[in-house]
Each structure stands twice: as structure tokens, then as C-alpha cells.
Length: 244
Length: 303
Image (cartoon, rainbow over all chains, first blue to last red; front, side, top):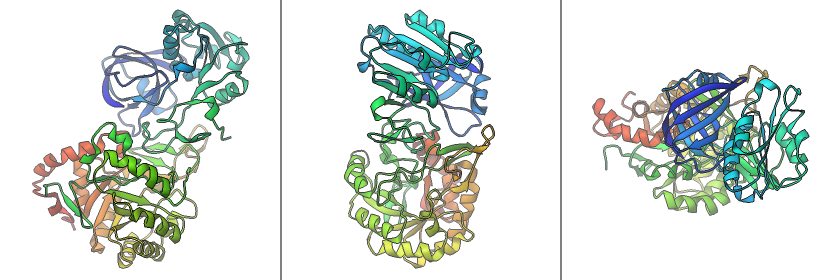
């Protein structure tokens, strides 16, 4: 964990309400894919936790959706402005369990952490199959970026305006060695029920601190209470307890 | 004795800055990024007789210059705190720690305090009769002078360590409660715990927090906290630990002028994990600016 000042290189709209921001700064504490950063914004008391989409040297890529006043303020920032960011938060995905042909399932703003994960799995020699789920065509992003990495990509939209009509679970392939997923909780539950291998899930929760101090984001698991921010956000399928 | 040092109930603190319970866990998360031995001490996560998961999530809501939490005293229970957390803490913190205790009956408080009393590393017992997040328990003790005094007497009977009673601001007369605790034998008073608050999500039209209401903290509550510290410090003859929205060296000095012997820092730790370290480092310059030779000289300076 490190609190650093990052300088914005770019901040652009890439789909409906979804922005991609690239920043330069000290990324040395970001050690795994599936981790997140916590961003301080002027005028807002709590920080905004955003998952890491990509890291290349000292350049950090974040993809975020405008869902409230804080992310709206972020979307209005431009090149040259700076942000104070707490980096290297959360456990991230465990790549050692992937097998040779893992399946990556991202829904909405659950797609970004899949990108760095896909990159790492491919460099490990895996054949990576990706399903990206959205509600409608104007929300779709990163299909080509995943293809450029060499992934086999399927896009689903709930209204059928792009790709396969339906949910990510309507596009599950018959065989894969393992899976990794991130997205809204109803999607995670559906994946949990439908998947035929073990896998890892990344969860989202309202956080106070983002580094394990306040117990604001705790959940119950098979192996005891866990803090989404510190012991997660990634949990293994076998330890998940669905509360409702 | 340094210029920053203060004496809290007979124990010397290198400086008056104390991370508040519930914002500092058992210290390890912070020990990853700075040497927490720079602190005066810290108050560890509220501990109860039995393990508690706490409230459902969401437990956190943002406010203007503050936040609401409804964690609900999540902790592993006193036995595990003693067998697992304290040995780990000992590796990163070599000063007496403040043990924060909550309960649901007078017997609970006495049981938990009796066990913690045997722990060498525990310097003070901070007895929380003010957590607003627990139904039917903690809160009621802090809202009545007699009930608060009963907890103090029960705890004093099982410990030789200083007992600091942590009070709720959600009462009509905090001075009456503080005085009752002093009469019952409390060695110190700490205040304020969080103010009961809530937020509603405009899109869902429902409370943001699953428990509907929670404890409001952060810089927004500083003037309320300062006023209550001033009122209580004016009325009792035992040390007062001031807290509520403290985020800077200036805030620490202001709290001490209002009568605080030591000052706890809460929500600030969550938004800036280095907050306490930075406040301690900023104190000498602030003291120079305001012509303060020794911090201990200004305690109650505005009373």
C-alpha cells in the first residue's frame, strides 16, 4: 500500500457513462491483477475505489463508470491534473489455478480487471476465452482490446443489440479449465450456479478505508469473516456464502 | 519528558495523539506503512465478550466533510483478541495500548475487562457505553447516568488499570452522565463517540446503510465534539480524552484548550492512513506558531 500523486495523461469517454483514464505515477505497489486503487477527490470525504485495468511501467489505466457525484467529478478532469491515489489494495486473482484454458467473465465495469488478468494469463501461455456482458450496445467496450491480446472474445447484451442476446451465462462454453469473474452481484450468482469448474470471484462493496482498518465492507465466508477490501476483493468459489 | 508529552491517568504518553477505536483495527494495517510507535498510544477495535460479525452491509455512507458507519462492533471476541491479536500487536507496538471494550450487560463489561486487565500490554481500559449501532445494548448504558455509573463500578471492581469511560453525544445532558461516571470511580472520560445520522439514496429512495442509521464522524462534527469536551472538562476533575472530527495539529491544540488531556483521531485515519503520523509531525511547528512551550501546559487553557 502506498499513497502517491498521479498525473492524468488522458481521460476519455469509451462507452455510455464509461471513461478510461490513464495516469503516470508510482505503480510499484500494484503487484497483482484484480487489485484496486482508492482515489481522493477534492470536495469528497471518502475515496473512490476503482479496479486496476492495466499497468505498464509507471502508467496506470483505470476504467470507471459515472455512477454518482464523485465519479462525475473524475470524468471532468483533464490531462495534466493530478490525483492522490492509494495503490496496491486488495489481494487480486490467483493465477496459479488457471489451468491451460481459463474462462474470464466480466460484466459492465467488472470488465476492466479482466484485461490485466488476460494479459498475464496469455503471457503465461494460457489459451484465454473471454465473455464480456453488457446491457445494451452503447455500453460495450474493450472487445477489440481483448482480441488484440489474443483472447477468444464473446460479447453478450441483455437486449440483443450487440453480440449474443442474453446474459453472460447464456454464452458459457462447454469446456474450460477454470474461471475468473467480476461484475454485478446478480451476475456473479448466476455464474456461481452455472459454471462447471472452480473459479474466483471479485466482489464490490461500499468501503470506508479500502485497506482493512474499518470493517466497513465485511462479508461472511465459509472460512470466516472477510474484509472485501483487504482479504478480497477476490474470493474463491468454495469460500463464498451468498447472504440473500 | 518531551514538549509533546502528556500524562493520561498516570501513564506518560510521548504525545497526545491516539487513533480512535474502530478506525485503526489492531494496528497492523498501519504498521505496514509507518512505525506506529510514533503514536501516543492507540485504542484498539471495540472488543466484546463474544465474537460478533456486526451489521449487514452497506455499512458506510459518505457525507459532506464526514461519513456514517454502522459496522456494529465486528470483533473476534475477547478471548481471541488476547490469544491472537495482542501477540501479533506486540511485534509492531511496544507501548501500552488502550483496550476498547463494549458490552450488552453489566456482566459482559466486567467479564471482558477482567480478562483484559491481566494483559501486560493493556495500559488503559476504554469502556464504550456509547456505540450507536447495537440494538438494545451498548447505547442504553451511555444514555442514563445511573446505568453508565453501574458499568463503571462493575469494571472498576475487576481491574487495577485506569478506566476511561467513552460517552455518547446522543444524549440530552452529557455533563450529568460524565459526573455520574466520575462519582462511580472512572479515571477518565473520553468523548465524543459518533453522532447518530443517516443518508437516503435518491435513486432507490431507501437508506444508504442497511441498518438505516449509523454513527456520523469526520471534520463536520468537530465543533459539536469540541463543545461537549469543553462542557465535560469544565465539570469533572478527571482527565478528558477529546475526539470527534480531529484532522490536524491545530485541531489537537484546540481540543486540548477545551480541556482534553489527550486527543483521539478517528475518521481521518480512514481517508489518509498517514493522518496520525502527519499530525504528530506537524505539532512542533503548530506549537511554535501559537507560542506553546509544552503541550501539557495548555490543557483546559480555554476553560
